[in-house]
Image (cartoon, rainbow, N blue to C red; front, side):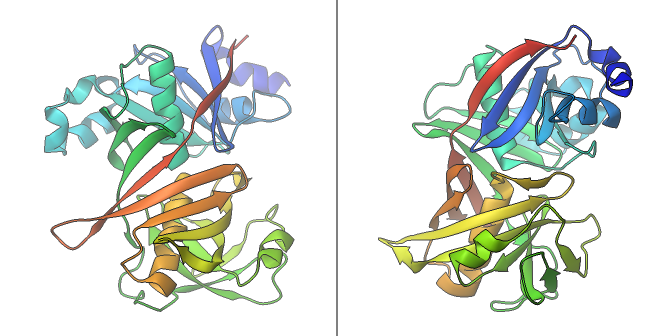
Length: 316
């Protein structure tokens, strides 16, 4: 307990909000002056579900101008200059174990909702808001079901190994009798997707222990286990169920970038490019993923779903 109290001295008196997006939960606070010092110890203390607030991660909302890393990201994106550049908000996202992460799709929705609810930005329905993440700029659009996020381009984590029907790794997990082939997808952060043939196999997984991935990507990976629906496509829309073990967190009720990666992998394996819209059912709710063609042949991904603030408090 003393360890937690000393770790939180730097944030004593700071207001915070507990939020979630389809069950992926976060401790969130605003740092408009860029004066709040975040350390791995602070993150672990706040995200501890027994001794802290509890969450899959911590998100600090801080203006781009106060963070050198964010300034560099914004400066490299010409489109951001037209939206205020250094006056934009940076999503400083940390996993519950105190490690930083490039991106979190559910986190971006929660981040946008937090900015709106704290009157830090104005965002009407169908209006767009650029935010800066470690994976680059992301565009948030307010929609009836919550928020739609422009997630950027998806790609194979290892283009030299991946093909239209290939796997690039093997995954071992508690509850599976043997290693399963998997495909690694980048959504700005790394994902390794495993297809299972039946929902019971998905239910039987024990994700309290991290799955073993061979070979392990250089920066580690999130691991998604996905079961395609039968039939896979209804009225032109693909449908899958998903469970995920997040790098640095463990199993979570939802993972936005993981939902995008899972839809991309199943689309590669089974549905071809004609199925552009996917419903992804996660333990915490339902997400929608859309693939949008680009002139250069790549594809942008849009993720939409709800976000909610649960309660507010003060760090004491």
